[in-house]
Amino acid sequence: MTHHGESLRRLVKDDALVAQLKEDFERATLPEKDKEMLGYVAKLTRQPATVEEADVVALRAAGFSDREILDIAQITAYFAFVNRIAEGLGVTVEAYWSP
Image (cartoon, rainbow, N blue to C red; front, side, top):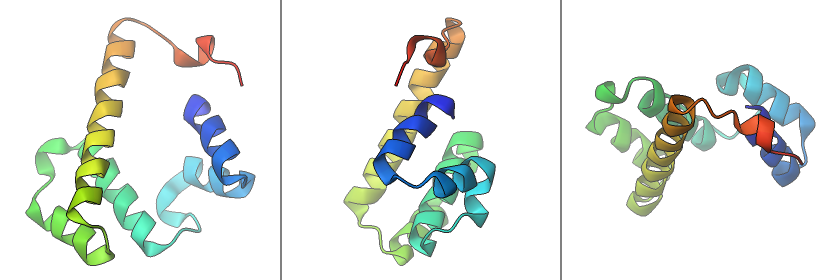
């Protein structure tokens, strides 16, 4: 999370929050809505075959619109796609990125 952590740090301007997110997003000081979203993202990333309608229903219950849920799923899938290409080619993003 080095590369994305720096981008997040610049966006939120909260080093403590970034450190919490790196350690364990479930224990980070975040609104429950954000934790629900991050739980979905983690599940879709780590165990995509286990995602089911109940997960989408939970996002709706947390306050996300169908459009927002689609965006969350698409962004998660895009990052998985790009990361697998980079890993498959032996690319290390941090080596080419400078803040």
